Amino acid sequence: MVALLLILPLVLFSLSSQGSERFTATSTFSQIEAKNIYLHILFYPLTYISNYLSFFSLDFLFSFGDGIGRHQVQDFGELYRWQLPFFLSGIYFLLRIKKSITKRIAFFLFFIVPIVGAVAVPSPHSLRSLPLVIPSIILISVGILFLLQHIKNYRYKLATILLITLFACFEFALYLQFYYINYPQENVPDWGGGYEQLVQATGKVKNNYKHIVIDTSLPYAPVYFHFYDSSILFVMVPPSWSEPNAWKKDTVLYIRPYFGHMKPNNLVENVYLPKIYPEVFAQLLNIKE
Image (cartoon, rainbow, N blue to C red; front, side, top):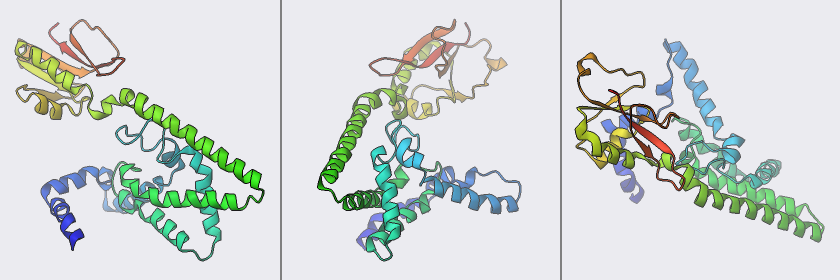
C-alpha cells in the first residue's frame, strides 16, 4: 500500500496530457516513419529487438556508454574495463552450473532490466540501465571467485589477487582524474554551460535591436532565456533562415553557435564557455553589417 501511494503521482502524471507528450517524445516507435501498416508491423518488433540487444553491447557496458555527457565520463562505459574478463567468465561459470539460485537471480535480472528501456530512445540509455549493476556485479564476482578457486597454488592465487587489485586501482584512479579534472571542463555544454553568459550578453544590447533571432542549433536557448531574463523577446529560426523583406529597415541581432570564425565582420560579441581554458560558445551578430 505504501508503494502504491508513493507511485500514485507518477501514475497520474503518466495519464495526463503532459505524460502522453513525454511518452511520444521518447517512444522509439514514434521515430519510425512507415508508409503503411505492414511496414509498421515489420519495423516495430525489429526496432524493439535492436534496442533491447543494444543494452548488452560490450561497447556500451565497457567502452563508451551511451555517449550522453550528462550520464557519464567520456570514454568510460557503465563498468570498468578490468571487469570485462571476469564478467565473461562469470557468465561461463554460471552457465555450467545446472541448479543455482545465484544463476537464476543473476540472469533473470540481467535480461529483464532492458525490457522497458528498449521502448524508449535513445537506446541504450545509461540511466534506464542502472538496475543492471546488480546482476553485473554478481557475474563479475562469480567470475573472480571461480577463477581463484581454480588456482591451486597459493603464490599464484596471491599474485592474481594483487594483479586484479593493481588494475582496479589504476583504472579507478584514471576515472577520478577524468571525473574531477577533465569532466568539469569538457562537458560544460552538456549541463547548459554558456547559456547564462549568452543571456547576459544579449541583455546588454537588446535595446539596440528591434528583432532578436536565435539559431535553432542552440536548442535549449528558449528555456534559459526565459529563466535568466524573460524580458528578452526573440524568435527561433532554422540555420537556413534569411531576413524577411519586412525587416530590411530594422535592426536585427542574430545569435548562433560558434562555427570556427572568431571575428566575422558583423560580430557584436563572442560568448565564452565558463571554463579554465575558455572556448567560444556562441556569437552575437549584427546582420546589417
